Length: 134
Image (tube, rainbow, N blue to C red; front, side, top):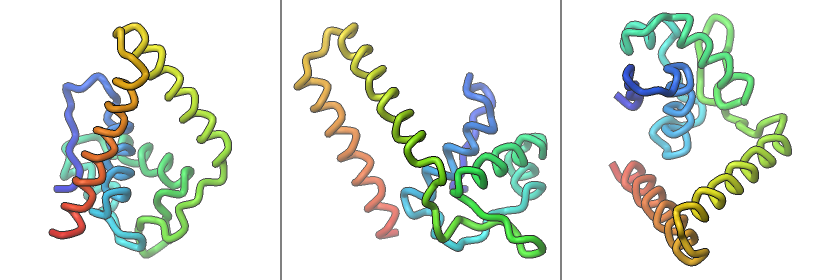
């Protein structure tokens, strides 16, 4: 399955579902317009409470990652541009600043930090390309 949940992870399950759906969409595992399992189907498959899946789907819909079409189901959004783009970009900048603070406390140089970022980007790109060629 394209979504893996770790019930022993400290991250709440609904956040794992959100991250999993976003990752699958970003990697092309889930295509725009592709239908997702219903809340009940996914809850059963993951062995979690359906309210947990419903909460994740509500947040994904709010972020425009998915769209719900009444009577037809839940789909990966065809237009995933978020309404709160500036706010989310500010959150990314804050996260990146926090990474720099951590890098400083780990004794990393700027070059080591940038090399690490490039390594992660390269790994991400390679995994995305691997999915596209499957």
